Image 1 (cartoon, rainbow, N blue to C red):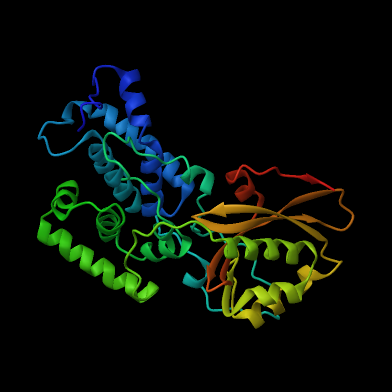
Image 2: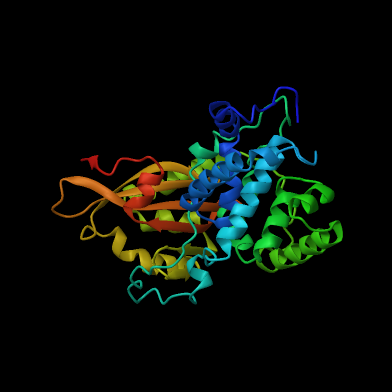
Length: 338
């Protein structure tokens, strides 16, 4: 613990102010563990409450800095929560690819994976005097594909992988935080990496940081333009042949450009209405929030928030979060004037 961070455990306002400095990074940590922004917000509050109640134990054994002590509490809060909650899912986890000629299945009440708006990620910082550069929310460790994949891990393996491969904690400190041996922590990490390879291939280096390229930003501009102009051909040109479209909370998803375009035909007709699309970013990925002006309506209303995975200059995956609740999550207005 740095000399700049000496909490007065008797002073509740001071203790709360010091804890608050770590809210953003702890919320991202809980989001990785649970796959839900709403759960993460609640669990950080629980973390701070437990920290205050157990403040007399801080520093008792000299093992943890204040920041690491909070991470220990937050990890245990998440593990406790996961004992009574199902893992977060996306449509491919619960159903096979759908027939694009059949209407999508209605929304289903399942624990769906949630996006994490980039404006919240941009607020995540670490005290520079304590651990310079320690809290950089790398693109590959927060993207939806990674978050969906780690939900398949048992909770303690998930925690071990996040602490070791995402946050870069040493094996000894990770084992101490999880109250286990170094050998057990290393074994859990190897099992977690094996499971991840089954879902992600050989991508196991998760410390990369990158911002959207000019090419990716241009692709998003064309994606928005294709929707606003109801140009199905323009949209098709942006998709990889093996692209995938998922639409939580609908358990329906489509595999391949041809299936996506067949399913999207209705959305490009006057009978559906007109779209206005607003660029957004979530999970360090580009996206667009679509508003619909339905026939007979006088304002545009929320339709869906698309989060894009881009590979080799084309859209490889669209995760389309359906419903106005996501617009609230992104701080977007619920209506747009004509």
